[in-house]
Amino acid sequence: MLQGCASSTKPLAAVNVPANLIEPCPALSPLNGSTGADILPWAVGVIEKYNDCARRHSALVKAIQ
Image 1: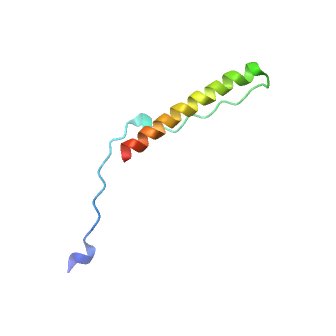
Image 2: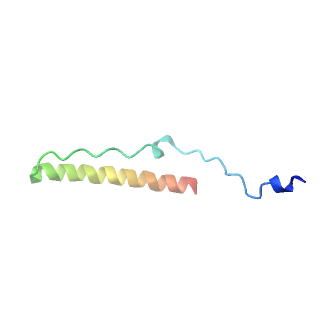
Image 3: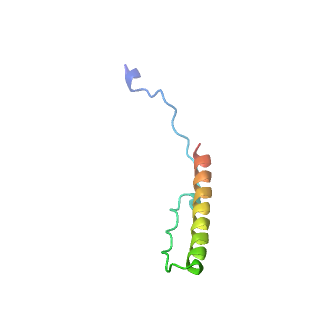
């Protein structure tokens, strides 16, 4: 009689995700200035933050698969 309540799907396995993988990506700094001396360091910082966030996102995806 209880067969209709039986679950046919497997329960999800608990995944222990490292804390650094579930942190939000850092906010980008505002661009202050319009010269090359202002833009170049800002752009390098944006690229570093993006690459770090992309690495953590990729590691998180691999951890939960």
